[in-house]
Amino acid sequence: MAGNIYINEDAANADIAKIRAAITRLEEAQSSIKKLSNSADNMTGQTGEAIKEKCTTLDSQIKSLTGNLNYTIRLIKGAIQEYQQKDAEMASAIKSGGGV
Image (cartoon, rainbow, N blue to C red; front, side):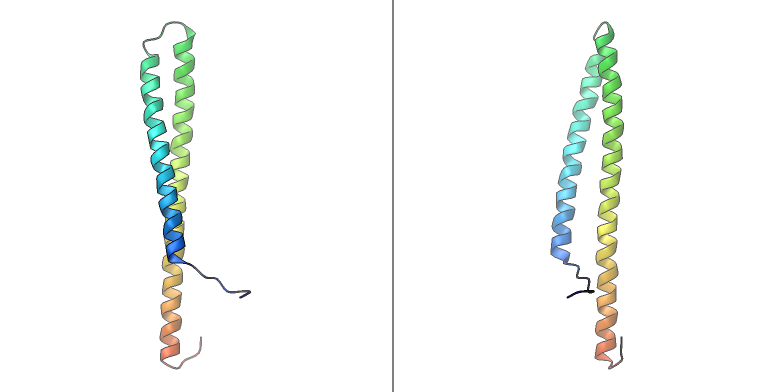
């Protein structure tokens, strides 16, 4: 099997489902962070400002992670599509008696 690439669509879709579940959890965390940040508005002293600063940082990190995960999903889907197309082309060439 050396030199061959196999794309298992079911495994890839299972990976995509896991990534989507991770995105959902990140979005839930982001929502909690926003609520905490809003609550910090009512705090006095430097504690509220420190919480808001940290919330802003975490929100930015979550946005970045979510973007990266969505990009990964697009890459996986692209790989599936590319190899399905190559498989179809190869099958067509074989059926027509041509070489690859």
